[in-house]
Length: 539
Image 1 (cartoon, rainbow, N blue to C red):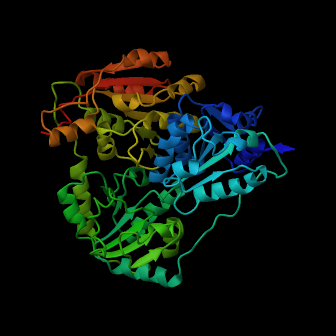
Image 2 (cartoon, helix red, strand yellow; image 1 turned 60 degrees about the vertical axis):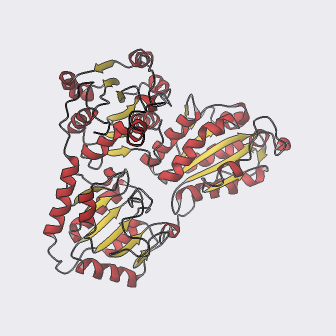
Image 3 (cartoon, rainbow, N blue to C red; image 1 turned 90 degrees about the vertical axis):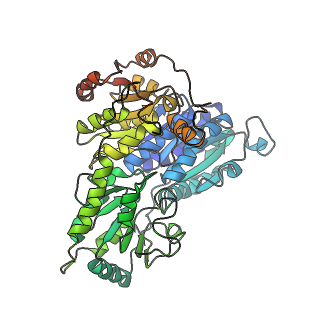
């Protein structure tokens, strides 16, 4: 007979999920045991549940398959909650398995018991608690389906410890057919007609452009129709940023001159993006509720379409299917040269590097610019949340197949786990992690996995002794009244060496020349930059 734990692992393997991240716990020993002796599913043992969850999310973004993490009940699940929130905000397929108290103790306020339906019900796409072995197979079937279809997201499954070791008569759940919707012919013809007549069209591309092939297809579509494109929040890796048709991103604070130019758009085609507050500049672009321009929205999940902005054409299908159906123009298009130059010019203004020479350390923007110049063509860049990361999105000129792994949710602590997961998944690619001193100490212990697996990732840590993004807002709202935003740091050089990293300290501009060789080095590298506070505070 097969145990429930064995059924879970067999099902994961059947779905080509070949890596699982965990922090062990006695409440799911029966599931852990099911990995014993297997070589087809790599079990990555982490030191804290938030890091394990973040690693699973990064792995999912690189593979397109659900990221999977396993944690124990109560404290373990609570630590993992940030990864569930991030998966929901970032639209990443994710399955979190939680070992629950024994079935007979459920809902008795038992030791470390939580009702996970209530805990995660508003942020997970679906939650389940399996108290009968016979229900495990159908739960797994639905879990994978829910995590990967429509708008991808997190699924949480709690399983009592005694159920995991129970026998079940079912076999591994094999992959089922994915639903595939196609746009109707009339809508496609309407889109073609609108695109052919628009004088100042714009494509807003988002995370629904989720595969390397889809990125190639998007660029081909833009070039065929001669339409510029802007990308949604932290999706700079969708298009070559140096391409004339790339108009930048919708970020936390787009310049007034760029937004004024975008307001001149007469057709906005949104492909694979959710129109959330940041991407719409706090719901000011396009105009609520009826946009000022013709508006076309393409998304796999119909629930995303029409939530804030009324559409002239709505296509509830994968962007790749829609773009393929729209095809190429078979007639001449309006001259859009001036429109494209206008948007490209605004983008160039944003990417200009500030020439400040601070007196209190190194401008981290100059570090980012230099790294960007020497990034390999297939590099993977992970970025933690914080002000230090702002220049990464602004001055690094990404181009597929380069990848950007950054938390759309703004979760600090994401950067190091994501980098370690990326290095596990793509050991032959250069993986660079930008992280601040605040975010590094929120996780960071994932470097133990890098030490264990002999991974050659590059960590670039900005050290300024404060939560700088909060300090900036504090200075704006309460000038001169700094409290709660500064902290003392440990010796990062000693910490990094403890994890097996060679360490380079950069405290002045003359040492920046070390960076190109460090990026080219085949060994892991840990670079501590004494970054300027003066360079980022309001002036």
